[in-house]
Amino acid sequence: MDNQVFRETYSTINERYCPFEKSLLTNQCACSRAERFCIAEREGVQCNADDAQARCLRLLELLRNQARFALRTTDGRSALPHAKAMRVQVGGLRGLYLALNPDAQLPTIIEDVDAIVEAALSRFGSLENLPFQLIVQQITAYRGRRPFRERRR
Image (tube, rainbow, N blue to C red; front, side, top):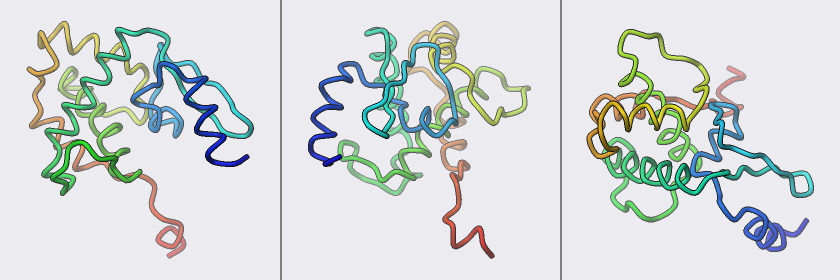
């Protein structure tokens, strides 16, 4: 399938995209609001609620803004490379999990993004009040899959 045709079809079908799509598609987390769909051999994720998508968009914006130094980026608006986007998404969710459960062990898979965001809102009052120092530590600590050439050694 031509990439341009795919992008046009994708944006037509996916009216309410999931901000954490990369981490959902790589099975690093799950969400009760996520709905998967397929176009040809490719898979996408959309959110089934406007308010949940708005919360996740705001959280991702705050995470990215707070982690600019850790990611070594100055521009908060341009698209991040895949590895850095994964660090923000997965590392940010893991940091949020630890902020909510300080005595718990860090899970390998975040079970429900929407539930964690809801719990954070009820505990901290707003997303702006999150303990970003702890969250950014997890963003910095997160390492995705190593490149194939490094795995062979």
